[in-house]
Length: 133
Length: 236
Image (cartoon, rainbow over all chains, first blue to last red; front, side, top):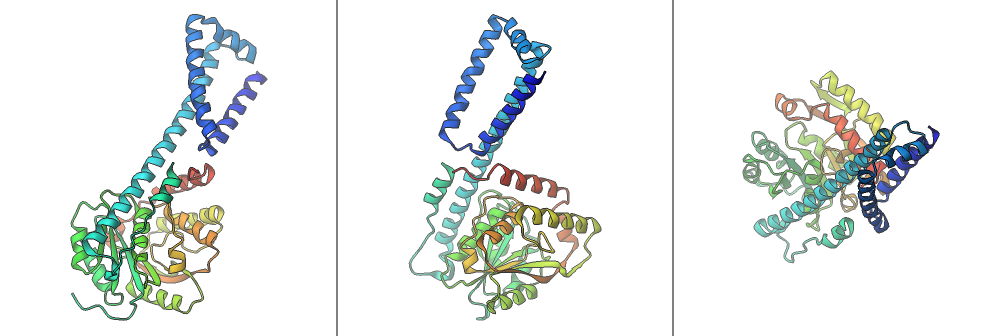
């Protein structure tokens, strides 16, 4: 029973670390490799259903089904967090875009505040690109 | 529309507005008796807020969609910064809960040059008709903010703020919604600039009570801030 506890705690720790450092290219590559790995595990366990039980025995889990459940929970947590961050980044891009458009429109319709002669529109796009890419 | 006075020519008042067409005109007209420059950020209102603000003599910047308080404040500050003569910036709520006299005394205090940022506090001033539940939520928010940002204030979420150009240039809010208030405190702390609280009076009108935030939303705000700090907000 101790083996699975260590594995799960390690998995949570790795996940936490990965999301804190989610911008690293290596991690994004790692996520894709993990997806392929999961597909392979799925294929193997369909062809040979007893592997789940065998793996469970190795880790001190009673049933192979339970091991699958643990795996499912971890994958679900990781994908939920992934979507959370993806949506948040999208929202931020949308906010930046909307704000830039609003200021440009206000300046083109009403002129600069106090009717300045030389337009000095803020060009934050480079900065935003750095932030978002 | 009365001719704006020449005093406070170096001040921009930023009004964030989302569906406030009933009251925003009166609020801006009252403000314009003291401040000639008012920028109204219409945060994607579905009513006639924009037209009301223009009629009241404000410059209007309009978000195509609703983004939230933090984004609106950021837009207003960026727009006002386009005026190179702008020295002081005041944030003012559109729902009529603040008094222009308080904004005026905050700007006067900034002019003395002892602080860069002034944040209104209803606990140093007065809050007529504040419900008990709101008082409790604000007290909890205060403790939460002290823990997360290290800034200790008597009033956690007061929309009335005044700051100098130096601080305005540093404002870069990432959180679009109401969680920005805590984020702003973090920015203040980071900037190392001098800040203080200023007693203000909040008028809890029936209108502002109905429009204001539900107390339960503080849970959402706290979670957002926590996630933002814990998992790092921005991608590098």
